[in-house]
Image (cartoon, rainbow, N blue to C red; front, side, top):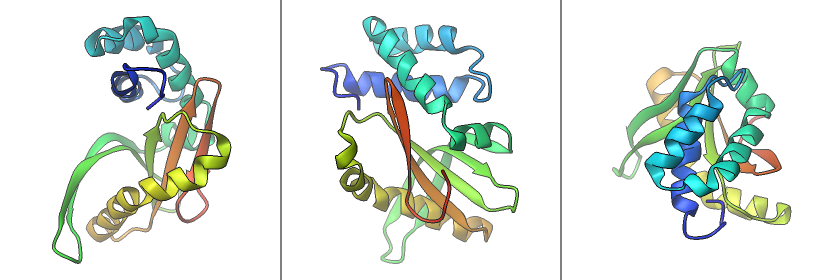
Length: 165
């Protein structure tokens, strides 16, 4: 979440909704999607922050690679882990690399200093690695999980394994 007040969770949902709806390569539909999602989430007064967060994510190479390849947004993943725990969820973005491998992208909008990124990535890693494991089991393909930390003025990609960036 952005950490910009009580509306942080709603902003997060608005950002995800916009990134699900717009053209990832060009940003076409951004203004309309932001307006719609901000109304839906009740954060119209934060439309500028939502727009900036989405634009920062769109600027990343990993998102542009997804846009140029076969990709899926808000993809359902369900798997049974080795300990018998059932894991279900929706992956923000999955795309197929040129070699057939998959990249799993999870958008984060946490307002944290750059020095805290490694600790925050460790916090989010178990879920993302479980999704990657489930997709590998289902497809037989290697999966490279990454986190995208979007901030209003920049975004950072944190690979959890492999070399996606």
